[in-house]
Each structure stands twice: as C-alpha cells, then as structure tokens.
Image 1: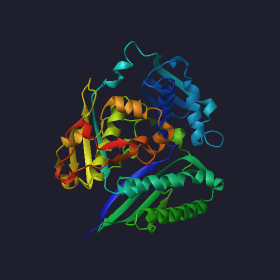
Image 2: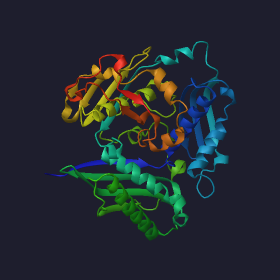
Image 3: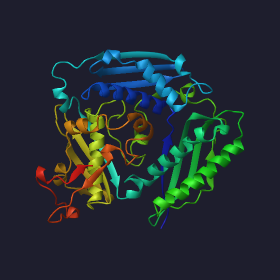
Image 4: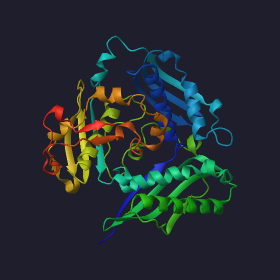
Length: 396
C-alpha cells in the first residue's frame, strides 16, 4: 500500500495573528467577568507598534474596561518587551469600540441568535489524539514544546514568534513523521548549531513521549528536518508582519484537511453563534465516533437569525457516506442558552486563543461522556434517542 501524506501547521503565541486572538479573547474574558451575558464582538489588528481594537463590548461597567492595559498585559505575557519589540508601554493603541451597558431586554434575548451561521465540527475515533487528525495533533504538540525553549534555554536567545509545519505519512494505519520544519525567532548573532541541536533533542524526546501515548505513531525523526530554512529570523512578531484576529481558523480548529465554518471564534462571547456553533458541532462529532456510529465524523450545523438552538444539517462519516441526522439532533443541548451559561467564565480564554479550542481535553466543551442505555442502542444502524428525555451526552 502506498503512503498517504497529510500536513498541518502551528504558530506560536507571539505570532501576530495569535497575539491578536489573545487580545480579543482577553477582552471577552474581562467583559464576561463583569456580566455573564455580556455582548462581545471585537476584532484586533496589530502592526509594528500599533494596535487597533474595534467592535462592541456591552456589559455592566464596559466604559471602565482599561483596553490599553489589557493589550499591554497580553504583549508582555507572550514575551514582548526588553530584547524583543515592540515594547508594550510604547504601543500606539487605537480603539473604535461601542462601549456601554446592555440595552433593555438584551440580556433576555441572548438565548436567541442575532445572526446566521454555518459551523462545522469534526472528530476521528482516536482518543489518543483527543479525536483530532493526527497531523493537527502532532503539529500542536511539537509546536507547543518548541515554544517552551524560549524560557527553558535562554542561551538560545529565542524570541516570542515562531511556527511549525509537519508532514506525516500513513501506511497500513501506521503513522510516521515524514518531514518537519520550524521557524524560530532568534537573535542574529546566536549559535545556529546550538539551536539545531536543541531542536533535534527536543523533537527526539517529544516524539518518544508521543509514541508512548499513541502506539501507531513512530518515534523516528525524519531525514528532512529544517530549522530556520529561510535564513536568519530575528525580526518577527508585529515588527515583522501584520496580524489580525480570526486569521488562523485552520490552526485553531482541525488543520487543513477539514473544512472550517464561516466565522472566527476568538473575540466573541459564548452566546455568539460562530463560537457556540463550532463547539456544539465538535461535541456532536465526538458523540458520533464515541458511540461507534462512525470512525470519522464531519458535522455541519446551521443557525437562522432568531433561532434558540442549532439545526444539524448533515453528518458525514468515513468514505463520504452520510448519517441520518434525526436521532442525533437530541443528543446534545444545541442551544445558545446552554453554551452561554455553561462555558462563559469556565476557562481562561487566553491559552484557548493561543493553542486552539480543541487541543486540550480539559476544555469544558471537550469533556463529554456517553450515558449507558438500557436496552443498548445500535448507533451504527442510526437508531438512537427519539425524545429529549433520552439525552445521551452530558457535560462532566
């Protein structure tokens, strides 16, 4: 059987797009802390020492939110300042925000969609990778580990920005890393050989660890291993490129092999359909594979303006076959009320924005369990719960 190849990438928290996502979600978090049903829809752009924040924040005390301090704190948290510009205290922060309390009745209407949206969710029946595509899981794990070198090995003189791309091969359901490339921001006068050695040693250790978690994954390091293949990478972050929130949807979700929905997640509260819908669709997809109805599931759900709950539009399993959506519509509470009440303030959103919404099993929307049925249900044949009282999935 011939090898099949898949690829995925990961970008560091200091990447300008991910920096923008983290700022946007820090504002969501601050508003939601002040009022659980806060309305937040913000976009963030960064370039050089300029930061632009636009949109709406509606909550108690919205006018008192110190946007500038939040922006500066996020810059500092990923490593900007000192040796690596821009200096947070010297940022030119510009805002065009609608700030104020919720209008009369808005809190009550948060349970109804204020927009239309089409959202996708995906899962594959591999608990070892948290039901994510192997290439996406691997890029995330290796990228996060290499990002830690900045603080673990200060002699390498690494900056906050960086990115990773992996190519994996699949043959007879066995996986191996076929090629690897990373670009790590580093002072130009630094020791290139020391960086290459550190990357290789880190990869060897992490690959062994990951192969112990996922037995069908080879620990071998590929012959094609590139470190800063384009040459010196000293000027990075916002000083090297502009950034915008919502641009890394593929990195944030499932990698390039899976379609993404129509809207960004970061910068929106959990009553917003783009964010709530993506999480609901993921939970349905996980339910499909966890019950054995498929080994792979791609779920599409949709909202019309004014809907209280999402409608499952399609469930596609391995081989392109579709599953009857009817029994699965009742598996989860797909309402905005559920997402807003359960997930608002349930998790620090800055790491979520930096590392992805589905990369960590501790995410509250990732924790689901399948309740036993009596008599047993044959999910493979598309039979299942027919009444709301027969819900099978409950949040832990």
